[in-house]
Amino acid sequence: MLAQNNITNDAIRTRVEQMTVEVEESVDSGPKDSRNRYEITLEIYNEGHNLEKIAKLRGLSPSTIVNHFKKIESEGTKIEWQRFLSKEIEEELLEIIDSVGNDALKPIKEKASESVTYTDIHLVLAKHFSE
View 1 (cartoon, helix red, strand yellow):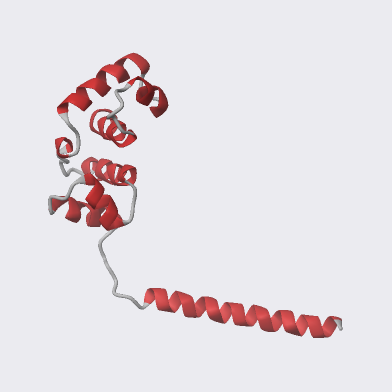
View 2 (view 1 turned 45 degrees about the vertical axis):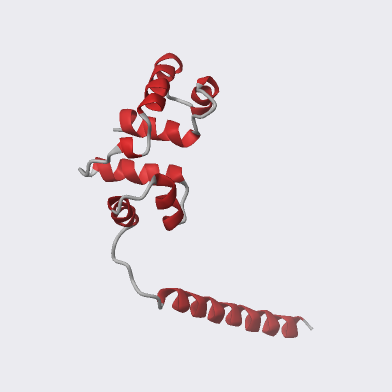
């Protein structure tokens, strides 16, 4: 009985390995995109889309797109943050950050007006406090 179970386990293991290879090959068989994720985000940004549309097209959250923008800007491409952030919200958040700091988002959000989103906070932090 034990020998029979070992054969069955080996057969199952072999089939799982075959299926894994088949899945990897099907995933790899699509067209290659030599651009990295930041270049793709930059290309969509350059088409003039808003933050939410860029996020939707990329299948990512707006906060992740903001992080992409930070990386893109750190590599020398200027991001026009005002495309995504009103001057009023930016000024409000800068005043709040001046009083509570920028170590955590929640204290900033709690002091901000209802219309301010976490994405707005991420944008202000990216624009003013990124290295």
